[in-house]
View 1 (tube, rainbow, N blue to C red):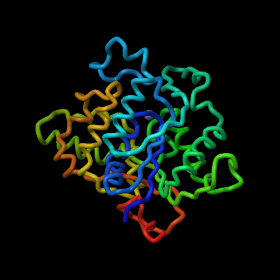
View 2: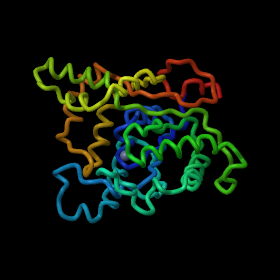
View 3: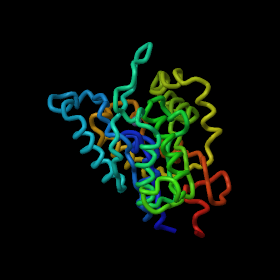
Length: 290
Ligand SMILES: [Zn+2]
């Protein structure tokens, strides 16, 4: 069954390549339409790859991130569109500084929701993906991404909501993608240590995560087999050259080991309007007949 439509809503360019990228690449390769909606331009991202910390990059960050995003989308084989909001940045310090004026997290939810509803009504996704209520990562744009995605999923099919944003379309399913699974990182870390890398590459991450992260696995309803597309995911990630250090710990686990130890990406079915049975192995499960 092909020809279904998947929309992945993300806060910043690069999020699509680190969260559910192999799933998207697989569905695109299988003939489905996949659209990434990037809510902000990632203007406030730092240069996280030392090799890209060179003159002429920081002062044209917004353009650079557009180029990187286009390259990543081409690698994944997906379409991508911008919603045009401005990155809120990750506030740091104690007390936290106020969010910068005009940033995405300060845009009234009605306004950002209408903008996303317009894209939903235009693309007509059967399935949408976003982050959980904590954003999966405590960035104000990620939390806002959750709020706006849920609101748009609910409103898009309602003719009385946002009447100027196009003909109503009712998406069938909404998922939260879950990447930071403690069990998975523990497995990778143990494997690395068994191969003589001590301490394992994720030891610090594991120590930093509270016990709360253990509960994520319990929320998973859907595991999509996509190991074949892990190399595509990594290539897309590396296309975000300012954001990803190719020598970083993310790439430290050999590909064949990853594919063998944990060949899936994980999702939580948050809302559905079609009948399906849990656990699932396909985001489009339950849609075949419609
Ligand atoms: Zn982000």
